[in-house]
Amino acid sequence: DIIAEWINEKEQARNIVRRSFEKGARITCKVVKGKEEEADKYRDYFNVDESLKRVSSHRFLAMKRGETEGLLRTSISPDEASPLFHLERFFVKADNECAQQVTLAIKDAYKRLLKPSIETEYTNLTKDKADKEAIRIFAANLQQLLLTSPLGNVSVLAIDPGYRTGCKVVCLDNQGNLLHNETIFPHPPQKEFKKAAKKVSQLVAMFKLEAIAIGNGTAGRETENFIQNVAFDREVKVFVVNEAGASVYSASKIARDEFPQYDVTVRGAVSIGRRLMDPLAELVKIDPKSIGVGQYQHDVDQKKLKTSLDQTVIACVNKVGVDVNTASKYLLSYVSGIGEKLAENIVEYRKTAGNFTSREQFKAVPGLGNKGFEQCAGFLRIREAENVLDNSAVHPESYGVVSAMANDLKCKVKDLVQNKERIQAINPENYVSAKVGLPTLRDILVELEKPGRDPRTVAKVFEFSKEISKINDLKPNMVLPGIVTNITRFGVFVDVGIKENGLVHVSEIADKFISDPTGEVSLNQHVKVRVLSVDVARKRVSLSMRNVVNS
Image (cartoon, rainbow, N blue to C red; front, side):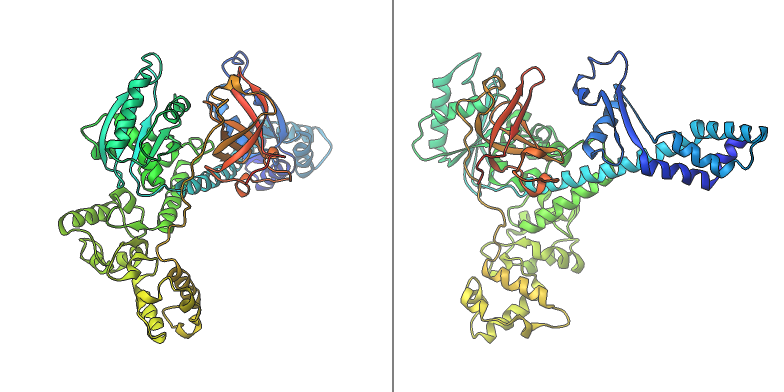
């Protein structure tokens, strides 16, 4: 025991074992005896034996989750012969009875002390690596989701579908304000199809609604088919909206503060409608972990995950810019230089003093000092401001440079904006100074061409195949339209119009080898997929994008 403890504490001994783990550690995973049926969802990990170096992040996290749930048992170790051989070479100095005792002590030290310690070390290292990869993918997915194409300021009829409890219907004006709500029952068991159709048609006419947003949850496809058969007095675009996280929002304090007099079903329908109008402004109200675009997000380091996701939200908000006169305090709080308290102050100032007419007014907001103004001013937009630059990404500290450019061209700033010919006549090198560098000047010229332009594209109407509504309708080799709903390292999930999302494995995404799907597809992308196989019992659908024409 004494010799084993002494060996365990030797740095050389620990390094010998580390090298063995580094070179040849393997991870094994087996199902806990008697838990086979309970662990059916982990069937792919019942008998794993592979190199630790090659195990993918999602497989490692899945095995560790199964172990945490008491369904799987994992182990990490190299071939025992290698570390024991090198330990004996280092510690055994003779060939006698004493050496035999040292050899026994080495085996005991390795089995009881060194191996468990170094195994924990490599488990933590692998977990940290897997966490970083999962967080990276989650952040990339979140960014794509937040930058989803908005429909814009149009009046919307939003529907949260349901069977027994009916479909919750809300009417929103072009600013997202709730005008009216009620419940219709077009589906079983009530089957009030004609009554529901008449009501929807009346609401569209009464509130002059321009689009319909339908949640993609339970009864979503049936509700879409129902709406497609309703006659309207005007052209109305119909959109299916991903409602992941809407229930979390509807039960949150934010939703209660916004709609204290309405229940969760109405709030959820409002969220679905607003997501169509401006996904970014609505999704910032929801905990990113609840939006449904992550990979093992509850298994990774929560502090690192929160930091990464918060930074992603801030970057997206700043990239798009915020209309300071219409933005909610929740959206404003993600602008650089503005936190929750300042966001509340801006909204309160707006209520008492009226809409902002210039960026200089920001300085009158209580708590917003020079440093905060410097950080946030370039990301806050004022539409129809007297100074056209107030509705652009040009920072107020650069207004003087733009004025100098206009003076040199013998025109006014407003005549310079969106005038490509005049802008191309400007040589940015003539305006370089100690405060403004050449890269900033080039950015200013780009912004002057399209000031305040939203980098997001406009939302497009999408239609699922009318032949498909449930998993039993799927047959191998069918080619179907779909929407990408989630991206992971091992593939992408695609909604083809049934309850279960299908998986396009990474090897089936393109006709070439790819290691990272994020470079090939994006969230909410409209794609065409071919059905490879359907496992009705396990509710799994395998899809392919290979040899299928995608725009």
